[in-house]
Length: 389
Image (cartoon, rainbow, N blue to C red; front, side, top):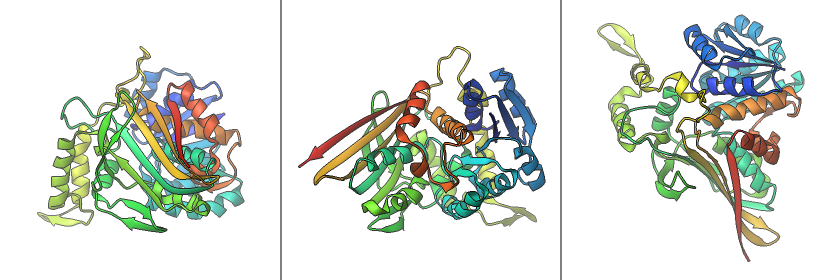
């Protein structure tokens, strides 16, 4: 089995590469990236004979298709703006596809390629990271056990850092977008845009995460779950997170920059030069990301301190009784589910366990076997439910 990871030298892609290289079902992992310095650093750190690094330019279509050919599945760990072009390249190359999310709007466009993948006899799983990904499958578990669904509420709780040091927990461009773009929620059979960092509530997570302030954020789960379970009458669906795992003070500083126009994507002229404010801000903030190796499991086998719990609460009816399911997936390696989930999915795709077409995770990933695979990686899911007559 050969699997290629595009952006394999990135923050989450390197975790996918590590997980695939450790899996006995996988024979070869192609770490594909533009940055060969980072790719070599990841490869040298992991020291696996299965890993082969390859320079790939996603914007060079022929180069991309050539790189994809011969691989059983592709994990796209690059920025969401590449999702559609990589999907089309996978169709040409005859390679199964999955990614870590499209931040709602890109995911909806990706769904339009369902028939293209179906006709090619290939599978695409859209938004198969930590979140989106795990919450979709948590919701599927509950939906399979309910006759109707009133609400799907997702809480992504990340243990905040011990200091106010400005460190980003994952992709700077993605966090900037989630911080500045209007989050979408589903209410009364309609998608509604809300204010960024709004609708705060305190939520109790399992130990050692604890009580955290949660707010709305734009995410792909909301784009698909209400439609996937529309026949069960879903009335509400939202996604909330706690400052993206950063301190409140750091997020407020970034908000100030955005409020003063540094989040704008329109080109402006400065001293005769064309400048995009958002690109300047992202470039400056990119220096506040931990080194690549800090995202990987060290040789000591002690996980990095990225503690988080992803919780999905699903409220509905079964046999005339009201039920609330709570599924919590807890790890002391918080960054890892984002890279591990697509690795598992790529293996399943290579084994032809996923049907052809472009799908959200909740329609094609069997929850119990998936949670069992996470458990093998010390990522544990606990299910509780309460009922009222």
